Picture 1 (cartoon, rainbow, N blue to C red):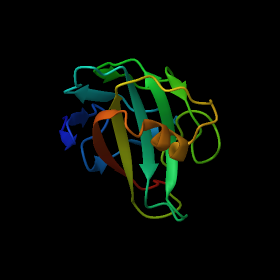
Picture 2 (picture 1 turned 90 degrees about the horizontal axis):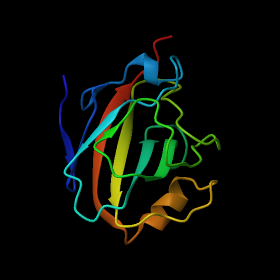
Picture 3 (picture 1 turned 45 degrees about the horizontal axis):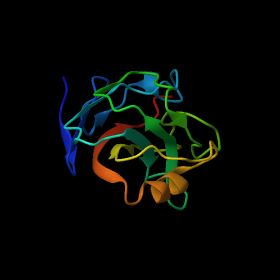
Length: 154
């Protein structure tokens, strides 16, 4: 079942997990570390690229932990599972690409934030969340946030 999440215009859903629902193990450190499929509705006219940030504000470190930073994704309604196109920036571990949820304890909230931008961004491949957020300033047409939950099984 797909449930809608909204935030400043974009509607983000996933066939992988419901809003505020549990993220299946497949998409975590206990599974395949595969990014879940995302569906984006209401892309505004003039969208030149998309950006994604997946962030865990509950992580026990200042500012939380970033699991995925990606930009210059062609405007599309469906971002498939295990997506590796666009530019893959550095996650909180300093590695490029998606890193699945892996909370040390308890249930954490994971924000899958998608941004519709009016430009393609010229960024170094070593750009992290802070760098991407700075570069997006003044270019965000709309954004949306899908929240999933995860607690380690083992």
